[in-house]
Length: 112
Image (cartoon, rainbow, N blue to C red; front, side, top):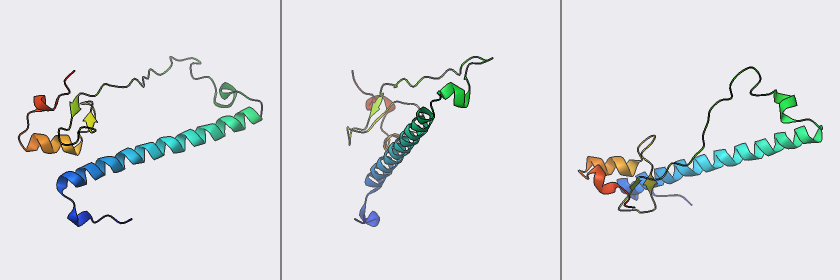
C-alpha cells in the first residue's frame, strides 16, 4: 500500500520516520536472534560448547563490562502520548520540533 508522502504534515512524517526506525531495529534484532539460534544449533549438533568454538572470553583478561538495563523514559510527546524518550541518544524528531517551536523541555517531562 503506497503512502502519499506529499500529503503528510511534518509531524506525521516525523512520526512515520520514528516508526520506520523502530521497525528497522526490531527486524535487525530478529535477524540476529535467528542467526544466533542457527549457530547454537550447529555447535550443539557437533557436540561442542561455545567456549570450545570461540574460546573463553575471560581467558587472560577482564570480561567486557556491559549492561543492557532499560533506561526509564523521561519525556513524552503531548501530541502523541505513546511516543516517549529516555533523554539518551539522538533526540527524536517530535522532541526537537517541540523545542524548536518554543515548548519548554520541562513541560515534556513524564510526571510520576
